[in-house]
Image 1 (cartoon, helix red, strand yellow):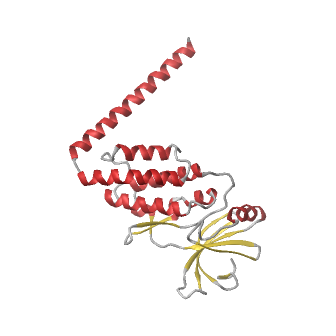
Image 2: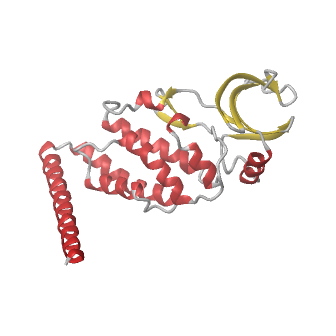
Image 3: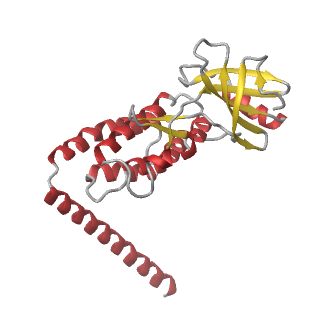
Length: 257
């Protein structure tokens, strides 16, 4: 944008967050509000991009997305404004190795899943686009994960299962697959990664059933039972892979006969 002001002077641009073909995202200041709230502006340009994104945002309101602010057009651009959340980058709080202790991970996972549930009424194409690592920020004092709605142009044609599949790697980073995890937690994460949850609400319902099992296991904290459970799980996986390998060899032998 040529000027640092947009929407007839309502928003003062602070910095550009992302840029792609037919798209720019900005952090901006809403100078018409008493709190001078920071907002996130998704700016779409080009007829094809605007046509797609207008259709996906049609009817958007605060019930579909609590962070939604408003839509406006200006100088041939279509812009959607959302609340901008500040915090530490997701990758900094949840590195590939190390990170928070188990109890804290469960608390963070609850806030992530609840944030997704709050936005579950959005078109799945938009919600899936939000579920990228760079869109997540962590407010450590509140022990919460927030979603920012940086949404580059997307194609139409997604469903609830596509949303849960996009969520899977983020949940894996938050919870991890520690050897001491319960069988129920591993099964739940496997189901999520395999796309067995058809909607966010189904996923969240299964999570709420899992949560007391995980909390009770943390309270017990019995090392020997955790070790035994882990070894049994390893044994089951080895036996499953062994049977699959034998079946593949048998099929190959039948085809070559």
